[in-house]
Length: 203
Image 1 (cartoon, one colour):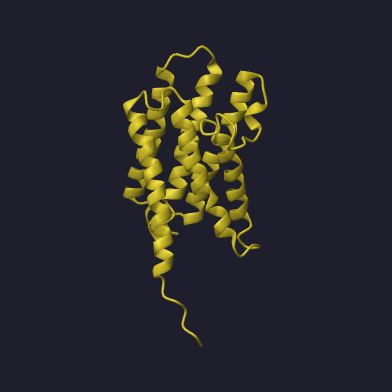
Image 2 (cartoon, rainbow, N blue to C red):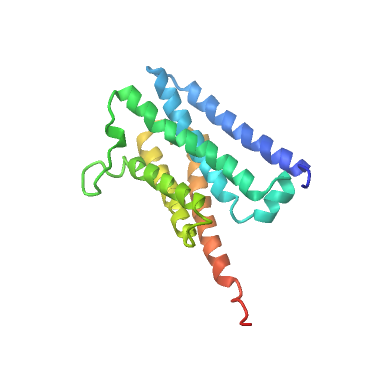
C-alpha cells in the first residue's frame, strides 16, 4: 500500500479547513433555536461531503497514489459522512417543528415543490447508495448510482431556497454553486470518458 503523500496531507488539511470554515460561518449567525445550528451544519457539511465523494470519481488512480488508500475506501469515507449528515438534517427539522411532514413526499404540481426539493433528494440518495451496495449482484447498478448526481442538484436547489445564510454569506455563495457546477462537470466528463473507451476486440 503506498504511503500518504505530502499532496494527500495538503488536500486533507484543506478539506478539514473548509469544513471548519463552514462551521464558523454557521455559528456566527444568531439563532433563536439551537436546533437550527444543527440543521444548517448537517445540510452544509452533508452536501460538501457528498460532493467530494462524487468529485473524486474521475481520479481513481490519483486517489490511491495521493492518499495511500484504495479509491473506494476514500470515496466511501466521504459518502458515509455525507449520508449521515444529510440523514440527520430532516430529523432535526422534524424535531424543531414537532412535525413529521418533512418526511412526506411532495407532488410536483403542488405549491412549494421546488423549495422542498430536499424531500425528493433524500430518497434518491438512499436509492443511489443501495445501488452501489448491490454492485456485485446487480449488473446495471451504475445507472441507479447515478441518481446521486440528481439528488445533489436537488439538494443544492433546496439549500439555496430554504437557507437564509446560503447566499447571505459570500463564502457559501461562492462555494456551493461551484460545487454544484463541478458535480455536473464530473457527470458529463464520466459519460464522455465511457463513450471514448475502445470497444473490446472480438476473440
